[in-house]
Image 1 (tube, one colour):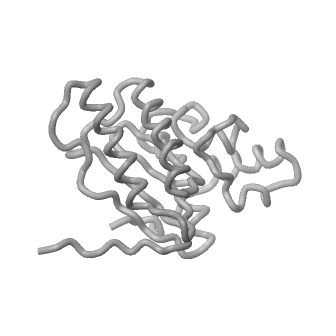
Image 2: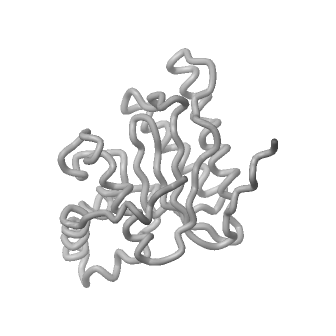
Length: 191
């Protein structure tokens, strides 16, 4: 039986998740995260993808992605994950399936979902017990928004500039929003 076609809008936003096969660990060392990071930069430009939030967890990745008429999400994910597979299999002497099937995606239809999704993505390492503070996790977009650190992956969140008038006030408001806010996970369920 053929797979159902994926619903990807020509113009819009998606929450994208991709997991390691059988929840296999994808990243063992900082160099693994760095390799994936460099591939994201390379292919997001080629495929006209905007990435507003991301988090690379040890066994899965999250993106909050923006698309336009020139974007090709499927090709972006295929090229990105295939390139990382070649890197991974060489560095870790691995053969077999690295990724658990196709990536999952959910269309973001309203502003509240966009905000909650960004929070959910960046609080993932805290919920998993990897860190107590999202600022301590170097493989997510939180450090761009909350600390003002440069990040070549991030295209600035649509709502970020509206948080305050100055950069320092925006960073403070963002940290308060992420840390003190409860994530409404009911609207984030990806089937």
